Structures are given as structure tokens and as C-alpha cells.
Image (cartoon, rainbow, N blue to C red; front, side, top):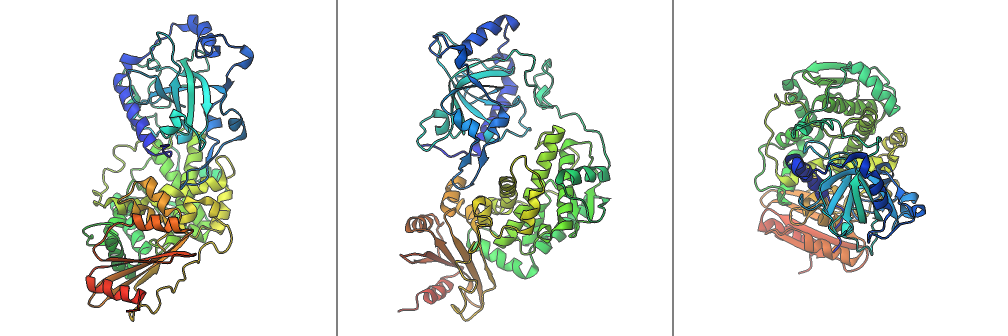
Length: 580
């Protein structure tokens, strides 16, 4: 069965880099210089069976910039849009220069990966999925398939993913595959260099790839703000003010931020909601403890609501690449806050609309940092200095489902923003998204639904639970696709959870705090067809006090209710089906 493109590929590349670092001396091919060039050229022109090739039909040169023009359109079905030139080369012989990474064995590189820069550090960010080739080398009599440390010259038949594809690379979950490939050392003077921080090509230290990149030139925070303003195409309405603060003050600021994001009146209800849904077995003593701990992760600055003042950790240096990019994100966030109300931190961050706004904020920050890193030739995800977070308190132990739920806006926001702006278009396009922000996490996963016009949602009425019980609900909200994915992933894989939850049209839940029966949850969901509704029902995690109800005609509606006690479940079940 063909596997979807998975984040597991990143893990494969990281593991490959670690193994290469350990074993580089055993498997490196050292070509005999210029004397081999003629033979290598003829090998690339030759058909895999060894017969001659016509120079007029030489492989078409391509590069990783062209590959990176492929744009994901949807995080549910993982559909991609490829540039026209790349589509025209599907099934034809192409040629690309990159670096080899082992796929499953260092002893036999018949199957390997080709990536744009040298892989030799488990701390360096792996390439995007659109920057990785799965390569199957052509069988040749007596051939041995060694690891090549030098840049590799790769030619073979390009395969793009299609629904009917039987390509081995696509079966393994890759986007790009090259079959019947010839891989040789690239000997030209314009060979790509290793990524910064991997040691020079003349390094004899097998651990040289672990060295950190050289420091940047220190610049003032005001000067950095000016650079970000030009890049973001957004001038400050009032000059940004910077203040250096100790870590204790930053901890206080992040906690205050969490308290504003989750109003005190909702916190007990949130704990009851997530407890009923099985996000954790034992609730924390305080919801804010968890949220503040998560909010402090790799945090170096705090911004006031209006975006006029940035308080920066006193040990943060603009000379460090990691810290520089984190500061770029904070400055980009501050500039947006000055201009757009939607860029300011939302209250009620548990609400689906609030989480969509948070994702837009994070997407803006990440995209600006990505453009800045590209301009400065910096790795997008580097290793922080050892002392940068030394003073941070130890993080709280947060259950995995809560962790996934919390970070989902950070994971989906950059995809949403880049999909809507384009990889190289003006960052001014983000301004329109702040003026007309997304209203649901569904739009983050499926950007084609953004701005589609009414009714974007609204299928489940806000008062859907009104009058069901004499008591008023303490919480009525939309859980959203961004809530269903981490919830269902408790028993499904992330990919499966996305597929199931991705079909939802709308939802809304109501939570009651009954005086003697405890908390009761009712959730109404809408689905496009009977099959999607049934798949959802089959995927709902089990619970000792749970009932379902559904319609068998459009609109396909599924209700499920949960309660802390049997008595509470009996009350909501009777309200859903009052007939004896």
C-alpha cells in the first residue's frame, strides 16, 4: 500500500546523518580526480544496460530550487502542485547534483537519498520533503555501491507521485524518486559546498560536523528591527523599545500571558473537558502551570499587547544564529501587533477561532524568520547556545495529547501562511490575512477553504444545546479540526487521525457542571456523507460513560455524550432521546 508523505522521513535523514558521522571513513569513495571525468560523463549518457546513449538525449539538468517550487495544497490528503517544467520531465531522464544520504544501509547504497547539502549533523535541520530524492541505482555488472562523501552527480528517470504510481520511492513515502540511476562523484569546480558548520572539505576530524556555525557580527536590537521592518515591508507605527530582563522576569511575563489567554472563569471547565476526552489521566493542580511551561519553551522575549515594547532575555546575543532568528520572529510579531488587531494574542485560546488566530501569528513569525535565514544563509533550525536557557525552570511534564493540542497552531500556521503567500512572494500578502483572518483550524489544514465565502461554518448553531438540560452549560465552543486531530491520535496515528477528522464540516460542544452528577459533555458533529460519519464513530476512543446518536440522512450528524458518572450520562441520554 502506498504510504503518505510522513514526518518520519525527517527522522530517517537525521538517523542517516548520525550514522554517516560515525562511519564516514569506512565508506567514502575517493575518485581519482580529473582522469575519471570522461568515464563518468559517458556513464551518465549510457543506458543502464551499458549500451550507448545519444548525447542529444542527455539527461535534463534540474536543481533543488526547482523541486522546492512544489507547493503542498492540503494537510489532509497531502496533495501537491508541481511546477509545469517539473511535470513535463516526469518519466524522463534528469540530472541533479546533491549529497548522498543512506536510506537503509551503509554497506550497500543501491538505495539511497539525495539531498541538497551535506548531511552530517543530527542537530541541523533536515531538508523539506520537497528537497529529498529517493534513488534506486541501476544494476551494473560487478558494481559496488559505496557511500560518496563528495557532491554526487545523479542521473536517472524522474518519477513524480501519481495515484496509480507503483514507484518504489512513492511506496516508501517519498515525493520524488529517481529510478535506473547512475551516481558518481561530481568533479567540477562549481560543486556545492557543505552546509555551514560541517567543517571544511579538508577536515580530518570525524566529529568536525558537530561544530557550531561561526558567530554572526553582533548588531544592536534597533538595527535588527530596521532589517526586519524592510524584509516584512511593514514600518513601525511607533518606534520599538527594547529592554533587557532576567529569566525570572521572563517566567513571570509568560505566566501572565497564559493567564490572559485562558480566562480564570474557564480553567476548571477546560480541565473537566480535557479530562472527559481522555487527554490525561491525572489533571494538573493548575491548568496555567502546563500552559506557562509550554509557553516558556525556547522563549527569549516577551512583547506587550500593542507591540511597542519587547523585553529580551539578558543573555540573548544577536551574534548567535539561533538567537538572531528567534529575535527576528519576535520583532515581526511586534510589528504586526502595531498594525493589526488580529495579530494580538487572543483571549480564549482554547476556542477554535482563537487557535486559528494564534496559528496566523505563528505563521507570520516563522515565514519572516525563514526569509531572513535564507537571505543571511543561516540554517532555519539550529542548536541554541548552551547557556541561553540555562536559567529556565525545569519544564512541567505535560501529557502527549495536551502537548500536541497546544503546539498545533505552531505546526500548521507556517504551512497556512506560506501556502497563501507563496514561497517567494511579497510578505506584504500576509497583511490581508490579518485583515481577514481565518476563523477555524479547518482552514489551516485546508487553505483552499480560507475565504471561501459564507457559509464558511455555521452548520451547528451556537444554541444547539439550549434547553436540553435545566442547567445552563458552563462552556460552549467549537472543538475544530485542530482539536479532533490530537484527540483521535490517542488511538490512531497522526496521519490516520487527520484523514478521519479532516472530513468534518462543523462541530460544537457543550459542557455542563451538574450539581450532583458531575460534568457532562455533549458534542454535535456534521459530516459530508454516511461513510465519513461512520469512520468517525469507529475512531472515537472508548469511555465507560458514553453514548452516541446519529442521523441517517443529510446532513449527516453524529452526537456523542460523555459524563463523569453514570447518573450524568443517563440525564444527557434522556435529553437526547426523550421518548420512553
